[in-house]
Image 1 (cartoon, helix red, strand yellow):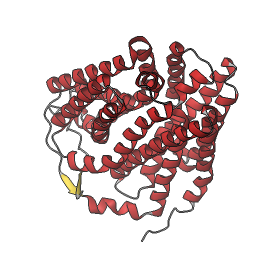
Image 2 (cartoon, one colour; image 1 turned 45 degrees about the vertical axis):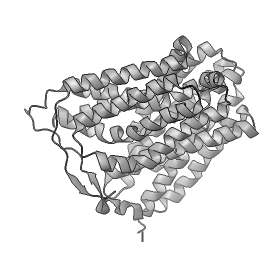
Image 3 (cartoon, rainbow, N blue to C red; image 1 turned 30 degrees about the vertical axis):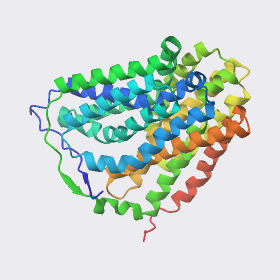
Image 4 (cartoon, one colour; image 1 turned 60 degrees about the vertical axis):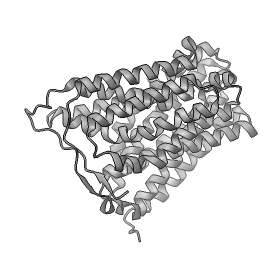
Length: 401
C-alpha cells in the first residue's frame, strides 16, 4: 500500500454537481443499508443459531469474522480503491452487498453464511472511507457540511436501529427473509445511484508514507488502543443482547425486536450527546462515558427480573454505548498531528478489532460462566478503559522513534 487518495474537494458553487441533493440522499440511504448489513447479525443470532443447529457462541463468531475482515482489509483496500471513479465504485460495492446478502439468505450452513459475511466486510470500509467526502463534492461548498452530516446520519442510524429493525423483520419474515430484504434494498440503491449520481472526476493519489508518520506518535497509538478497549467492552455484551433479553429477562422472542428498537432510539440521543460533549475534552468524556457504560451493562443483568428497572438500565447502557461512537472517532482524529483522514480510517479498523474481540470474549464467557456473566465481564473491560485513559493522556507531547 503505497498511496491513499486525498479527500475530494467540494464542487465550486454553481457547478453542475451543486444541485445533486437526491444523489446525496441516496448515499445516506446506501450508508444505512450497508452498515445495517454489518450490525444486523446481532439481532438475528438466536434465530439463525436455532435454525442452523449451532450454539449462540459459535453464531457470534460471524460478528468476529465481519469485524476482523474490516479491521485487516479496511486501510489497504481503501487506499487501493479510493482513487477510483466514485459512481462506479459505489455501484459495484452495492452490487457486492446485494449478492452477498442473497447468498446469506440461501446459506445451508454456517460455512456458506460465513462466506456471505466475509465478502461485504471487504467492501464496507471502502464505502465508509469515501462516501462522506463524495457527498461534500456533490453538494458544493455551501452545503458540503450538511451533506456529510446526512451520510453520517445514515451510518449512525444503522448502528443504533439496524439491529432492532432486523430483529423485527426476522420475527415477521425469518432471518433469511431479513437478508433477502437487505439484498433487494442493496440492489435498488445500486440501480438508483447508477441512474441519478453524476460521473465524478477521479481523485488524485498522494503518497502514504508521509501520512503514515502518525503511526510513530505514542499519543495517537495510545488513543487507538483505547478505542480497541472501549469497543471490546461495548460488543462483549452488545453482541449477545438479543439472547440476554430472551434467556435472562424472559422477553418473548416476538417482543425482543421492540426492546432493541427502544435501545436504538435512546441511543440516538446518546449519539447527539457524544458529539456535543466531546469538545470539552475527548479523553475525559471517554472516561466518564465508559464508566456510565459499565454501570448500564452490569445493571442490566442484575435487574433483569423487573422489566421496569430493566428498561432504565438499558437506557443508561444505550445512551453511553452510542455516545462512544462519535467520541472515539473525534478523539482519535484529534490526536493525530496530521493525516486525520487516515487516522479516522484506522480508528474504524481498530474499532472493528474491538467488535470482533468483544464477540470472542462474550462467546467464551457464555461457554464458561453462562450468559448471565456477559454483562459483568463487559463492565469490567469498560472500567479498564477508564483506568487506561489517564495513561493515554500522559503520552501527549512525547515523540515517537
